[in-house]
Every structure is written in structure tokens, then in C-alpha cells.
Length: 317
Ligand SMILES: NC(=O)c1ccc[n+]([C@@H]2O[C@H](COP(=O)([O-])OP(=O)(O)OC[C@H]3O[C@@H](n4cnc5c(N)ncnc54)[C@H](OP(=O)(O)O)[C@@H]3O)[C@@H](O)[C@H]2O)c1
View 1 (spheres, helix red, strand yellow):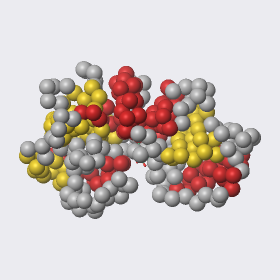
View 2 (cartoon, protein in one colour):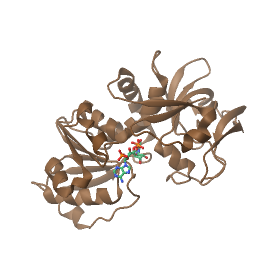
View 3 (tube, protein in one colour):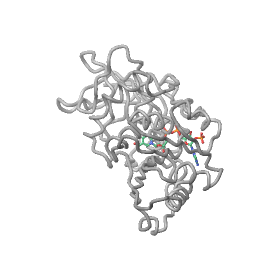
View 4 (cartoon, protein in one colour):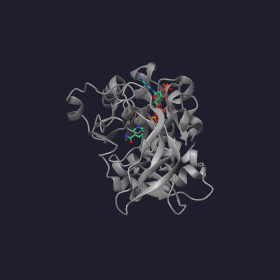
């Protein structure tokens, strides 16, 4: 089928809106769906730049990791794209129906397309990777972006006793108490401020990695009143850098458990099982999501336009 799609022909240029030949669905588990909304997430950008760890280097490619679509027969679903199929940034996409969940009638579809990917990062981390126990304390490192802000709200929804948000942008940090943060820390206030707010935290959701995360690990471990108390560090994003330097003593001198959350760390099945509840949370307004809707046909200019912090661009075919 001939469709129109955002087509990446070079990893260093934005996609172009072009005709594209969509392959036929293979087998009963696949269907040709009409795409209704697609989120332009950081993960989508990194794959379109050939930089994501799942990238194969093959071009041309159609970007996108998830979206909202109408299946043949009319059912509207949220779906997670299959790495083996062209991405969903197109008027139509082949969807693996096993990787889709129905969306209730009346749901704001751009909110779902905008919110599921960033919200899933903390939801799945705290439900599947290291299930949170009621009353535990959570530090969100990098709490000012879409995923970080949602993590503050989700940690609260999932029973955290105390939530601390840390980041670099003071204006955006100042908004976090309204979303449920008990305390906020500006990272350039230095290690003392972080230690005071979060020394005895149980879980850390880390969206930064790089130097701020390496520094924060050592700061928190040194400041712990009881070093035998578990500190579960869940690595989720790396906006501050792809690597850290970590002295081995960090892993020996305290009950420090370092793990990641993402595609591969948690099974696809576990992700899918979490989706209906998360759709409900976003649909009910329990998690604040701000979507900026743009036409897919304008993808080339939208791709290069500056992003507003805390707002997720959603492309509509
Ligand atoms: N593993 C998963 O399941 C999963 C799922 C979703 C997202 N992620 C990852 O999580 C990260 C955040 O995603 P997102 O959707 O929240 O992106 P986003 O909305 O673009 O937010 C990123 C935020 O990071 C902050 N930032 C950038 N560099 C920083 C630095 N050096 N120090 C402190 N803060 C910095 C910026 O905040 P300020 O400009 O306000 O400082 C920006 O708002 C990305 O790496 C993404 O790929 C992972």
C-alpha cells in the first residue's frame, strides 16, 4: 500500500514527508492500521539519528516507537511499534495487534500519544523493575523533563512516602511541589544540598547519567546513615552523558544496587501488561501531560523547531 510517511534518508538530517510503500501485514497478528497520533519522543529522535542502542544503521527508515491508531473494524488502540516493522510516523502502519491495547471512547488521543512513553519509564520501573513498597522514598534525578515530571507524580501515585526532585532548571524545579514533590534540589547547589534532601532515599530514578549521576551516587552513598540499607538506583535516561566513572568502592561500601529500566531490561510482555492501567491514569488526568499537536506533513520543520520543556510534540497524519 502506498502511504505518506516521515522518511529518514540520512541520520544527520530531519525526516522528509514522502510517499512510502508499506509492506503488507504478515500473518494474522499484523494489521494495516490508520495512524491517528504519534509522539516525537527523545527515543524517536535518537533512533532517527542512528544513535539508539537498538539502531541497525539501515536506511531509509520510518521513525516512531509508539502511537495511536484505528485498526480495521474501527477499534482505536495504543500500540508499541515492532522494531522489525516500519515505524508508525506515517498515515498508515502495520501494527502487531498483540502489542496494542484498546483505548476507551472519549479519550484525548494526543495526550495518550504524548504521555505513554515518558510515563512508562517510571511506571514500569516502580512496578516491574524494582517494585516500590508503600512509604519508600524516591529521588528523581533529572526531574524537570517530561519523563521526570511524570515520575514525580507516578512515584506518589504508586505509594511513595517521600519524593525528591533534582535537576538543573530552577524555574521548572519550583513547579514540582505542585505535582507531588516533597523537596526539590538544584544540582548546582552542590553535594551538600543533595545529601541533605536525599541521603537515606530507597530508590533513585535516574534520567541523567553522565557526570551528575556519577557524582550523585558517591554523594548519597557517603551521606547514608545506614550503609546496609538498600539503595536501588534505576538508570532510565542519559541526557547528561552516555557514560559515568564509578569507583568500585561504591559497589562494596554500601548496599547499592544498580540496574536499568528500558527495552530489554523488562520483557515486552510485562510492558504490555502495564499499559491499560497507565492509559487509565493518563486519561483520568491523574498524570499531567501537555501535548503540542502538529501535522505529520510538517515533520521536517517540526523536527528542527525548538522544544518547549515539559511539552511533548505529537504528530497527527
Ligand atoms: N528507558 C525508558 O524506558 C525511557 C522512557 C522514556 C524516556 N527515557 C529517557 O529519559 C530521558 C528523558 O526523557 P524525556 O521524555 O523526559 O525528555 P525531555 O522531555 O526532553 O526532558 C529531558 C530534560 O532533561 C533535562 N536535562 C538535559 N540535560 C541535562 C543535564 N545535563 N542536567 C540536568 N538536566 C538535564 C532538561 O531539563 P531542563 O532543560 O529543564 O534542565 C530536559 O527538560 C531521555 O534520555 C529518554 O530517552 C527512557
